[in-house]
Image (cartoon, rainbow, N blue to C red; front, side, top):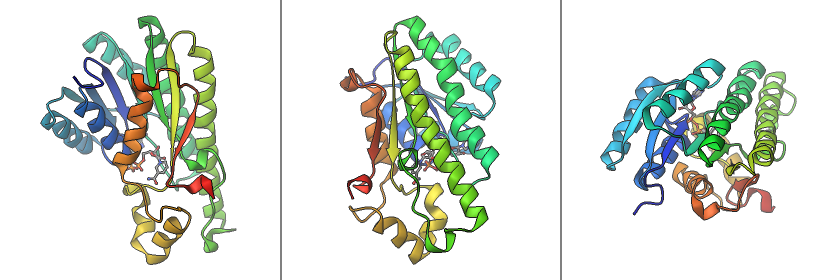
Length: 254
Ligand SMILES: NC(=O)c1ccc[n+]([C@@H]2O[C@H](COP(=O)([O-])OP(=O)(O)OC[C@H]3O[C@@H](n4cnc5c(N)ncnc54)[C@H](O)[C@@H]3O)[C@@H](O)[C@H]2O)c1
């Protein structure tokens, strides 16, 4: 018996990286997964991987910064499956301009919460896991050359503020929907080996920068973040709501 047998889950940003690992983790434990992303090819690959695990899975092309599209995606899931038990609000961008970063990382997560939480409340409960970041709990340490470079300042400020916003949304929706049995939590990954860190990993300096900030001395694999996300989405976390859980190799222990 899988932990998520009979559960219907939507995972945004599931074409690659952490979102793909989350979709596969839930699928491997029995969930039916709807894989959503702007990258259409990637979601079909994730669906095929989930089906290879014996799960039911489908692909939904979705830009999370489009509120009407997010609402329509959720309505389609309810119409197709009768319910929505789990939302992994994971899609995100990094090192982008201010407006795009806020639109995807902050508004995208907000639209998911705004339209999924009432669906879950009406059916008697559910679980939402937002992917924040260590950058949702503290400022990022700039690499030396980046300290005052205006482009880097904008991009780091955009990312950090968007992820702090995700932590705030997590707390507010946990409080607002607590009595309706909708649990809302966030995972706060440290540096993870995904596309998002690929440019940094290309140079020895970039790799050392990330490893040196991490007491465990390495980057996380996406599956290690997915494991924490799956815990928060599961009944094992039945009394956990409103937390922003670092999954960071000791980043915050220093
Ligand atoms: N990689 C890290 O070190 C790290 C650390 C902390 C937090 N995070 C967060 O983890 C989440 C997943 O990132 P990742 O590391 O797996 O990177 P990734 O680039 O592999 O995955 C991000 C996914 O989001 C999708 N996406 C981007 N914009 C979208 C939009 N508007 N609508 C729908 N999908 C969109 C991309 O197509 C991609 O598949 C992000 O929220 C990111 O901020 C990553």
